[in-house]
Image (cartoon, rainbow, N blue to C red):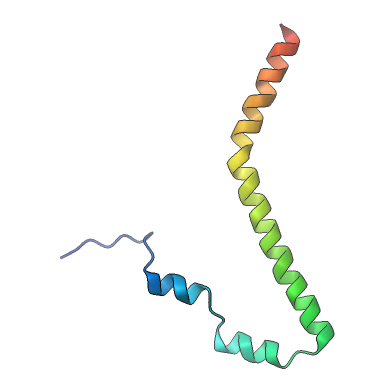
Amino acid sequence: MPTVNANKHTAHDLQLAGQMRREDYKTIKHMDKATLAAYLSRVWKRGYDAGYQAAVKSVAPQLREAAELKAANKEG
């Protein structure tokens, strides 16, 4: 019996992740222009914030190390 890796996604899982659910489509389909613009703005903002946080987490150790080196150089 093969072992299951919970963190491994199949190609089908990844394909579904990029698709909109039917309920969401129906909701968006019936929005007026102002409501749709506000909705898309919120979606964009959440994506931007998530990307920013991911970038900060990946760069934070490097920035901390650089700041420590700079402080050490000023002292010495």
